[in-house]
Image (cartoon, rainbow, N blue to C red; front, side, top):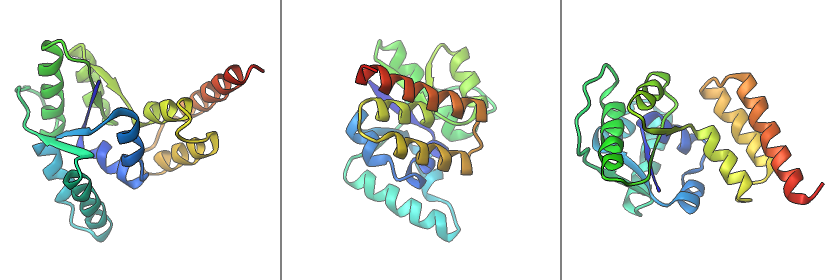
Length: 173
C-alpha cells in the first residue's frame, strides 16, 4: 500500500511531528515534485523549519519525491493534480494506492476518479488502533490538527468515539 500526500497534508504531518510515525506504520510517504516544491518554498520562519525537516526526511528516504506519471486536467493546484494523476496511474496498474489530502476539492476529485482518499485524521485512528499512539496522544493530535485545519467537530467526536469503542472491544469490556 502506498500513501501519496499533497503538500498541505505533508506540511500538516510535520506540524504534528508524525512523519516518523506514519513511516513506521505505512512505509515511505510519497509526494510528487510539484508538491515537494510547494513544501519547501514557504517563506516565513515557521515554514522554513518545516521545510528543513521535510528535506531531512527526504534525505533519509522517509519521504520519497517522485515524478507524476500521469496528467490530470483540473482546476486543482499543481501539487494536488500531480498526486491524483500519480495515484490514478498506479491504480490503473493494479497497485494499492491512497491519496492523503485535507483539500475538499481534491477529495471530491479523487472520489470522482474512483481513487481511495484518506485524511490525516483517519491515519491517526489507524495509529491508535495499532497501538503506536495512545488515546491521549490521539486526542492531542486531533485537537492540534483541528487548530490549523478546521475539522468538522462532529467528525472529531465520531473519531474519538470510534477509537474508544475499538479499544474497549479490544480489551474485552
